[in-house]
Amino acid sequence: MTIQINSNYLEKYAEEYATIVCEGFFSSKQYITGQDIIKLTSSNQVNFFIIKRLFELWQEELSKLKSNPFFDYRDIAVHEALTQFMNVLSKRIKVERDNLHPLLKKAVIQAIELATDPVVYYQSEIEKAPDGKINEYLKENKKYYKWHDKVITFLIDKAGFGHDKTEYLRAIGANYQVIKDSLESENLLLATLGDVKAFNLDFYRVNTDSSEVNPDSSSIEEEESQSSFFDQVENKQTEDKIEKEPEIVEKEEQKSTLTEVSSASDSNGTLDPALIKSRFKTESYKGMRGVIGELSESLAINQRFMFTKELFDGNSDLLSHALKSIDNCDNFNEAIDLVNKRYVNELNWEVETEPVQEFLLLIYRKFDEV
Image (cartoon, rainbow, N blue to C red):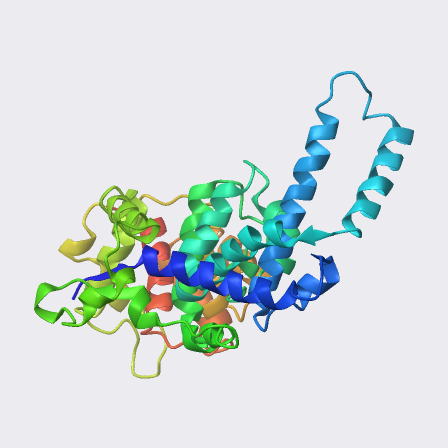
């Protein structure tokens, strides 16, 4: 079955939603204030996406002022006066209907995109962040993310995450896979829009297989959609998969092989160095050994997050200490003995799980002599 996002339905729904809300609010008022916007609809996320856009416009206004080459905006007195002026301005939000309508329409579209595909939405936010300031951008905007915020919260102000956008994009996808079952369902989130106008997921996600076309679909204008933004993203993700870095390709090859080899622990659940070596000395791992230097410097961002969450009780400092301790070992057997004594029992590792096996594979690649 092929699912396509119906951008025409999304556009029409957002337009009708914005029209209904504006007609209701402006029937008795000439303009809306910032405090009114926060309570405008039953959907917190829609309201805060409007505020987020106003914040962006507020920043753009400040940038325009500072771009004037004839005045010294670095002067302390000017800086303080400008800050005070902008703060006062931010508390004097007054938006008339014709200006609110497009802001509200866009906010509805963004809220639906976030509810139904948080990975794509938050990846698009990362793309907008200035180079080298991803953490700052996310921290500044976090207060506007009301839905699925756990998908990106872990990225904010975490040491060791660097400033490479590609790594951040991968980390968002990896984190979503770990926590997706704990997120609120899209149906519950989208239900908050229903007080104004019910949103139909079946119209939004269209089955394009000719054998399963709804015979009544010809009467639904929204289903005659063209290629959408989400289709383009899906194509881009497919291209990225083909052109993955070796480390990511290796990781996927690992997953398919781990279930095909014998156990790496003895009857007492203790890791056995000989069994681990036997497990990883397979044709599937040819060319993957002896390529890691210092473990503390070699982990990919998604690996560091997974190990912290799944193996080290969410304690990144404990993971860092473990990696450095393993780096100080002289050989593979000594490293596995260290892992057995300090972590397997103390942290209740289930040694046959994928995170543990991936962690062991990294140690094997560091110490194995080929």
